[in-house]
Amino acid sequence: MSASSEERRKQLFEVANELKKKSLEKNHDFRVVITGKGGAGKTTLTAVLSHLFAQHKYNVLAVDEDPQQNLAFSLGFPIEKADQIVPVSKNLDYIEEKTGARPGEGWGVMLNLNPDVSDVVKRFGMKINSKINLLVIGSVIQAATGCLCPENALLDAIVGYIKLREGEVILMDTQAGVEHFGRALAEGFQNAVIVTEPSFNAVQVALHSAKLSQQLGIERIYLAVNKVRDDADREKVLRFIEGQNYFQSIHYLPFDEQVYKNEPDIGPLLEGSSPYISAVKGLFLELTSKDK
Ligand SMILES: Nc1ncnc2c1ncn2[C@@H]1O[C@H](COP(=O)(O)OP(=O)(O)O)[C@@H](O)[C@H]1O
Ligand SMILES: [Mg+2]
Image (tube, rainbow, N blue to C red):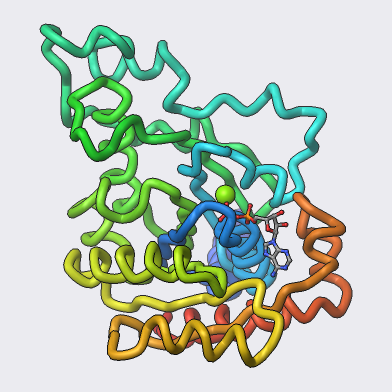
């Protein structure tokens, strides 16, 4: 074989390999915002879903916007290394670099409200494993006041940017709820999973969140009723949501001692026979059935 045909053969081999790799990887954009009352089980659910997507060959970007910032540990990041996690919202230099002001300097300073944050995942993303990347953005400050502070300008820009990323499943764990991010979320996130416990208060928060998600135009809204112990819990939630038609479907996730025992890391549960994980798989299957 001549040198050039050998070269050509190599090239073809590489192209074929590349195509094979691509066909094995799922390259769809699929974005899910997970919201609900504190303690309902958002972070645990986000972590399990991240692992399930990763096991099914999706590239996952898990985004932690919960002020408790514990998604990393639920995903298996070692607690001893907690000091390595610096949420973007606390990175004063980055905030200043992007918005032109440091937190606390927002008033009277010209803020760049539309900064280019396309480097944020590269700079702050934490590799959990070969398929899961975690971005800890941290909490939103006084969302309700709509304050024009540099941190909020930056977080808005990040959520706006996230929707432009391609070839990834994005799972965003948020306590601030969908209202803060408004249009940026609605434009990019097709799915909202609202987590509730079988309690009156948690269901009220869930209904509020569902209403806002619907108003924003998020296409599919799922209700995950977590920590369910018996039929009475199911019936109670059904009574509280009677007459509301926000939800594509309702998934009941059982109370599971193993979740408590292993917390915060849900990794060990993925291997065994946890009733909670089995129920989350049902939600996962329904979510992905819309990924065509
Ligand atoms: N199905 C479940 N069964 C038992 N404990 C659960 C379950 N889901 C979550 N938990 C526990 O409830 C607590 C709160 O869960 P978490 O995911 O941190 O809630 P959130 O992120 O909504 O505040 C954690 O201790 C977690 O281990
Ligand atoms: Mg949480």
